[in-house]
Length: 486
Ligand code: HDE
Image 1 (cartoon, rainbow, N blue to C red):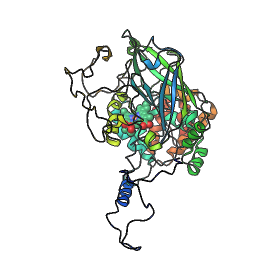
Image 2 (cartoon, rainbow, N blue to C red):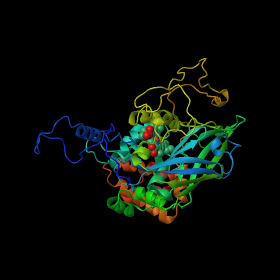
Image 3 (cartoon, rainbow, N blue to C red):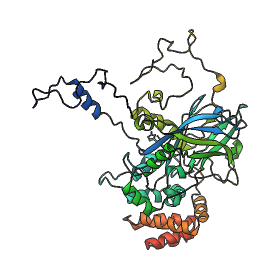
Image 4 (cartoon, helix red, strand yellow):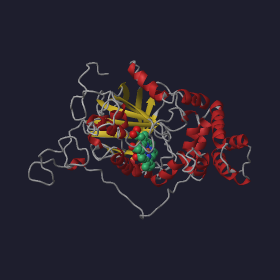
């Protein structure tokens, strides 16, 4: 906090004579409109809130660094991952998904795990979650899915009918539903959970050779979760429990860290792998593509100002650096548009110039003007390209790697639809205690659903994943397993 008792000023720098009393006629008023200090304070106060994120509104952030422990030059030319010992500053924002800005941290919900690396080649944003998969696999379904996670337009209450109606009609969600309703659905703290890029991305090395990659951030604090009853109690007592835990840990020097690993898939394997590697509702078996260590991420500095650094932070999966490119994953493709569009609306056209978002790398381009352009706006430098005045030029070596595309253009569903094997594998991986809690959580969440046909449709999915899974949920809900699935 400022300890120097400087002169108080208005927003235009004029010294303030009296910050306790409005300017009035006599001691009883009326107030004079020429009290600019009063008008400015009230007007600015009315404009302090920017729109909250439409998803992931509640979050917490921290600064830190990433250090390479295993050179990845064989797979990618991205400087960030090249050279053991190389350190890159980064900023991370953790978040819940469905709740509003003031909602509780300890809810059953995926957690955002958004990392901004300020690399020498520009920023790289890895905008993932604490789960390796997602509920759906085509961007076009996202607004509808989020509507079911948010408030009913009539009652303004959360609506379990919508949640389970949507999930029972979207069998691709079963894997992530099993993950979410299990122990990892409520992390003990942001420090005790893993992070994932979730999607498949493309890495390209200096020879122009490409591989597919998935990212895994493994917490060095160990995975710890919170049971539903403890979480509900804490949500009532301290809705900012995870936020406070992260801030206090870093404040006292207990710096949380994660090891970054990748799975690498040879480019040509994508055509033959038994699961579509671009379907974000599916994982790649670690037996098929083992984890390879890349480096270590350490969070060692709290934000000085929440609004400036956390609320105004803007991440996008489209923010990539040379050597890292998109895969055809339909969810990722949709996100490449959505994030910057959201930032232009929520923060403004020049959001990338804000201190928290501004690359550490030099910026040289012909983008000019736009609301709140608070830097020199390119000054008097040449403002178009091509030009004969020595303006910034492109370099062909940074072109995106060409790749083949095939198929008729049309609105076409994925052609692989086994949504039960991996969900069943996840169930069978669980201990008896984990299965018991999973079933209890699902039964408690589904009990309020009004219509039995929705519940039975969902039970069929659990049953197809694993008969025991379906039978235990059906028993908990006192409903039959339909003959047609047996
Ligand atoms: Fe997001 N998502 N998302 N999302 N998402 C946003 O960006 C979107 C998806 C994730 O801390 C928004 O600034 C679409 C998957 C995180 O600031 C928005 C689709 C994954 C964060 C948006 C998805 C995520 C966001 C909301 C379907 C995990 C918080 C406002 C194609 C792999 C980042 C905003 C932060 C935020 C769109 C699906 C993770 C609206 C269209 C899958 C961690 O742009």
